[in-house]
Structures are given as structure tokens and as C-alpha cells.
Length: 153
Ligand code: 5GP
Ligand code: ZN
Image (tube, rainbow, N blue to C red; front, side, top):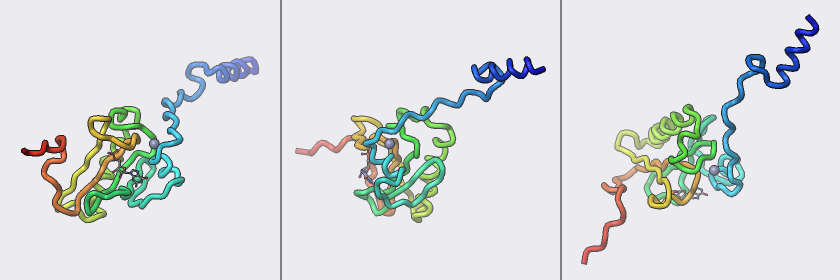
């Protein structure tokens, strides 16, 4: 009996199959120290928060380009929508739910709002921590999808 117990302990120390808890899911990548949105999540940079849960944070854009202009971000750092698969599925769901929730809280759900995410250079992404812009509160331009119109002669 004693020998069996010793064997179990040794196997457990070695991470033997079936004896210890499953390996944890791959750890989240370390957040870059210079990421402004990570600093906001950590409370090291100020923000006008409107919503927070265990997965996401929502706050006012520092340079609002509509009457309502909020940013919804995952607390875990990923650079853009291109890295969405690196986030746990709960966080992915929480991001979209939070977009609707903050729109509702701001009273812009019924009249309409827009959710945008810029991913990469061609989309003019400037902060490389995934974020969704939630904008509304007034009539928005019909087309926020294409490049700036070429000036007519
Ligand atoms: P992007 O161009 O990457 O899609 O959007 C980045 C957004 O982040 C911009 O709308 C910009 O105004 C906003 N932003 C940049 N730095 C800060 C900041 O320190 N605080 C807040 N609240 N917004 C920021
Ligand atoms: Zn970050």
C-alpha cells in the first residue's frame, strides 16, 4: 500500500497521465507594456468607463467622432480581430453583447448605431488592442466602409 502511494506521488510529480489535473489552456500572451488599452484595463491610464465585466471593458473614445462614441475592448490583449481565435469563446461573445448593452445604456439602440472594428494597416487601425467602436446618437454618414471619396474636378 505504502509503495503504491509513493508510486502515485512520484507519477503525480512527473505529471503522469490521469493522475494530475489536465494542463491548463494555453496562457494568454503577455500584454505589451506600452499598450494604452492594457494600461486602461489595469487602471494605470484614465478612461471614462461605461461598462465592465470579467471579460470586457467599455469606455468613451478620447476623441469622440459622434455624439456617442464608445470603445468596447477585451481585457485580454489581442492586437486586432485577426487574432480573435486567441480569445476564449466567452470573451468573444461578451464583446458583441457588450456592444449592444452599451448602445442600450446610452439610449441609442432604437434609433440605430454602428459597430466598427479596424483591423490592420489598410483599415487605418491605430491602436493595436482589439476594440469595437460603438457610434451613434445622431445621423451617421451612410457609407463608412470605403476609402475617402476622390475629390471631383
Ligand atoms: P482605431 O483607429 O485603432 O480603430 O481606433 C483607435 C481609437 O482609440 C481612436 O478612435 C482613438 O481616438 C482612441 N484612443 C486612442 N488613445 C486613446 C486613449 O488613451 N483613451 C481613449 N479613451 N481612447 C483612445
Ligand atoms: Zn493591450
